[in-house]
Length: 416
Image 1 (cartoon, rainbow, N blue to C red):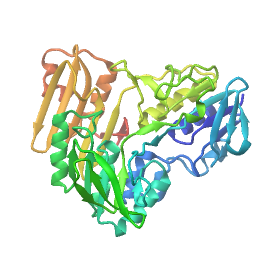
Image 2: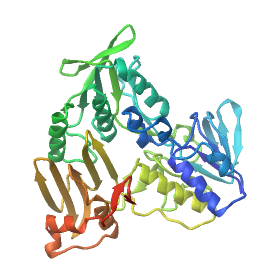
Image 3: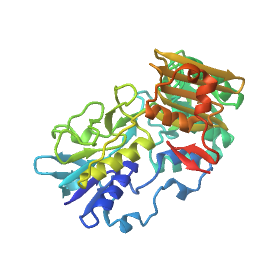
Image 4: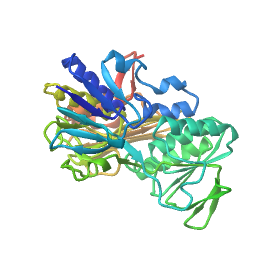
C-alpha cells in the first residue's frame, strides 16, 4: 500500500502516525508547500507575544519524519489530482502515485479586496513566516490595527498589547467573534478589553489601507475616519485550500464534504482538518470546524481508515478557548443566539451563559471564569437529559466542576 498525505499540519501528522500504528512497513509520502511541518497555528500568537520559544511552535520533534519512516517532501505544491489514474501532480512537473490519499491542505487567510492591502506592514497570520515577520516588527511599533474581531484577531491584539503596543480592533459585524458570542457576551468582552487598554469598534468597515513610501501608516474607514497605525493585521477569516482540486471529480462545497470515516466522494481519497466540511453533532448543520482539536481527531480517524481500520469521527462541535490579557474566554457548541432554555450568571468580572434544548446542554460561553469548562464539554457530548434542579445555573455549573488536580486545555482534560 502506498499512502500519500498532502499537508504537514496537525491533520496530516496525526494521520501519518495513525497509519504507522497499523501499517509499520508501507511507504508514506508527505507533501507540503511550506518549508517545515508540524507547526501549531495555536502557538503562533504565543511566539509573537514572547510567551513561548521559537521551538515551541512545533508540536513534533524535527526528527519526526525519520522516526516514522515518512518520505517528507517540503516546498512542493500540489497543482492537480488525477483521480482516475491515482496520481498527485506537483508544481514543475513532478507527480506522486498513491493507493490511499489524504487531503489535509488546511486553509489560507482571506485578504480584503481593498486598496493598500499589499503595502509593507500589512500581515495575515497563518504560517511561521508570518509570525516571524510580525514579531520582528514589534520593537519599532507604536500602533497596530487588527481588522477582524474573531478569536485569532483577539488573541493577536492581546499579545501585542502585552508587548506594549497600542492596539485597535475594527470589526465589521455588530459583535466580536460572531460565530461564538451573542451581543451581550460581546459587549461584556469589549468592556473588559477596554479596561486592559485595547480599543474595540464594532459595526465599522475599513475602506482603504493607506501608506507612505510603500509602508502602511493608517486606515481610512467607510465613515471617512482615519486611524493611524504602522502595522495592519487582517484577521477576517480563512478559505479552504481546494483550488487545485477543481475539475478532478472531488466534490466541493465550501470545502471538501466527508463522511464520519473522513472519506470523500472518490474511493481511496480522504480529507481532514480545516479543508473539510462535516456535520455538527449538536446542530446537524454542515460546518467547517477549523480548530486544532478537530484537525487532530480527523487526521487520526482518516489515517486509521486509510490503513484498513474502522474509525468514525464523533463529537464534532465548535470549541474555542483562549486568554486575552489574563482574561479567560471559552465558547463551545451553540453559544450564540438560539431558541431553547438560556441560563445566565454574571458579575463585574465574569459572564456565563448556557443553552439547553429539550433538557440537553447544547452550548455555552464563559468569560472571566471557566473552571468548569472541560466537564461541561463532556456533558454536551454525552447528550444527557437534565431536569429539575439540574437546570438551575448554579447546579449545572457544579456538575461541571472538574476533579481535583485537573484542568482544561486545547479540547481535552489534562492533569496539572
